[in-house]
Length: 567
Image (cartoon, rainbow, N blue to C red; front, side, top):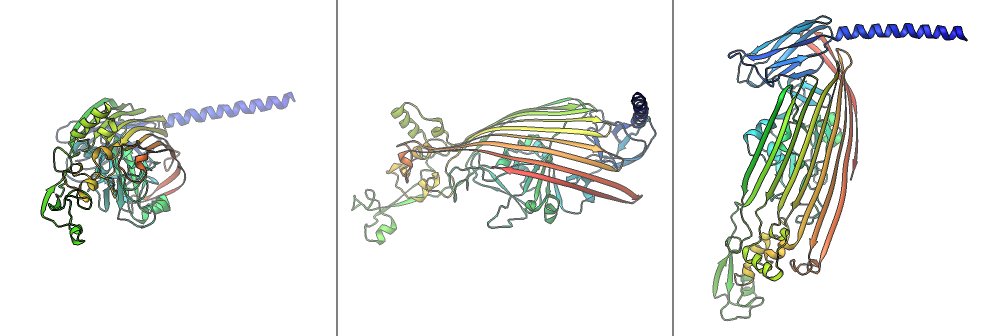
């Protein structure tokens, strides 16, 4: 027994020695690097944010503020290194790496107003755009946000990709956006595309509400959409996959297309701080028609109001029009509830990192008051009667939102890296009836033809319309973890885990005796609905890449996806 035990120990010791020797040898072989500096050929100035691609193994680095890049722990062999930057011609160099060698490879780029060889993200990983057989539209969201007044996600897409239509569900503050790729495909099923953010499938309901504020059915018409929970300032780029290729890569639910969103990342170098603020006005530029009201001076009783005589009443023989007056409460400064709203936004972000770790942190606060406000004569009347005016009655259409984001990346070993992406959004919104409804501002002001001396031209006065509370509060968390492992020089693997959860609270309240006398609303009514909506996603993939000849290569990818939706 002792002899057998001794032999086992000797064998184990020999095996441990062999493993230790193999580990040291492998570490020595991997202790090599490729690095250098990217500069402007004409000026010699370093170029920041150039993309350096180590072809064949899908490794990409961005140059820092000094134009430097570094690939650590590179296996021995021959590599092609390609550099891409907006406004410059791409350039490719070669590097032969021996065990333990640090290779320096500098690039001087020539300026040229040509488009880069774009790199896009697909279900099988990152690829050069010219290698992708299907149509992928790429939008530089970061540049657009710097140059244009972007207030919501839909603004980034509007008019910037062929075949992509952006439709507003209501037009007032807080209402949502519908995205259509190559039009609508069904009259009964959803026409919404799938949305991915940093590889995570996300909830993007275009009518995320149970509030009955217009349209056909609850949640229709002027409803918010969850895609607007994203802060445009955090988005780096957007890729849109169109046509049958979307369903081939992402499943049958992607038959309406796929929108892939990539948020900003930190880059190697010193911390970069960015502070921004925005202020603006919200104005209704519509022109509203004038109401014409017939009068019968000989009949002060009339069928409804004293002397009120419309054409239909006259045709029915109920009255005779002796005069016509004109008035519109929406065009009269004393009676209109349409005022100039106000919008403000404040935010900050910081990004940076080292060769082993990078970070991007951001925070944003947004507040918007819509164009609706209680007319002054009604505000004074209510204050005299009750002593105060409820804020939701004074300002019935508002939006307040807070957005936080943390993106962290790390190289955990020579051939592995991880990326964690976390986003949190909290919002509170109030809405008014603003669609196919009898209780809208325009309906009560224009459709009824009420004369000026009756309710100042209103069928239902604004105080009654705005007394109804239509509110929605949401809290949303989107978190994801992505790991990449380069098993060999020709095999790469990827795993992405994601979780998107939204807690939503819809409240519709009609205070007794204060709202419009319509159906049972004036008797007092309240709807209080709470929802928790979540999506869990898992994406596993592996890609093998071979160089068959100097001009011919192949790439084979396999993978699987798992999704679970709960509402």
